[in-house]
Image (cartoon, rainbow, N blue to C red; front, side, top):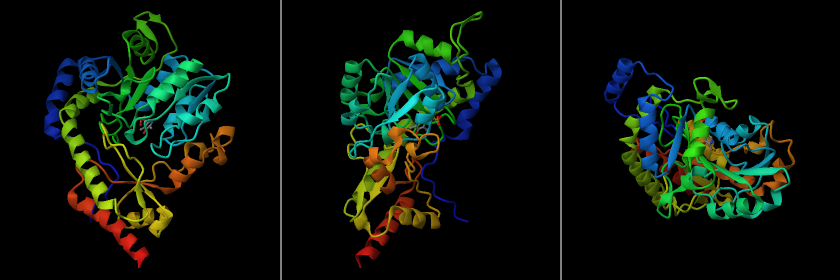
Length: 373
Ligand SMILES: *Cc1c(COP(=O)(O)O)cnc(C)c1O
């Protein structure tokens, strides 16, 4: 039995390297609530990423939900339909109305040129996503936010370690959130974080993720339980030792895919600018001139047990809890619709072998050759 090839596979250091961390937890009997590994991971991650402060969370979705609470966002929030569904779900969990705005075809991110026309008197914030780890046009988004007095929360779940002009992409906006889910570039099994620009907002987020407790007897907000456990934090510290090698391998895979596929008729790359990138995904777009459709190519991969994924299809705006909204209408989101119907994410992860990569490339080229005959 040959194992299926997944679209991603988690970074996992040798098990024996993790045992000493577990021993320490058993010795200290500190399992959670800001234990020593939690504190150390907050510090080391902030240093590694080049940000001021970071609050660890049990997962990225709780980080998103809490970030919106921390900034007291109300009313309407402008966001992208081209993302993982948790982006918009975090708005519904806060009783907020998502207003979908179309994306830029070159970045797959919220198109800043279309944000202003979506602003109403009820708009209080913008929730963009650095899709596939490609930076949003942060300068333009900030100018719009400043002009209209809006908060900006970046869903940076794909953007671990991404840099722009030498600085972390996570330093933009009022807050950024990260996900450390198993499928992400850096994982703690489950986990996430809010990146905070100053100690004041970090303190508020720290209260909010622990039921709103400011001290033993004082509850200052209707907080939630968003805390990361010591086991997850310890695993994160071990992962940090391996992350540079994993990112380097991803970069090589990205380069090999690009070289092998750039001349294939009907195949284009969904992300162009790879400066400071983390190579978290490898999305291709299947054009009409490829010969077979995106879905036929998808099925062809599946038949061979190569589990490519259609990120992001369907659009968030097409799910039942969103599709009734005016901004969710297809006519409003032509670019997102188009890319969503053509995109296919190829396998990319640190342990992907050159042989498997060659198989993926060979299948695409075989279909291309067939259609040009
Ligand atoms: C993974 C992801 C999330 C959710 O993170 P979890 O840690 O799985 O809760 C949110 N937004 C985007 C864009 C994601 O890809």
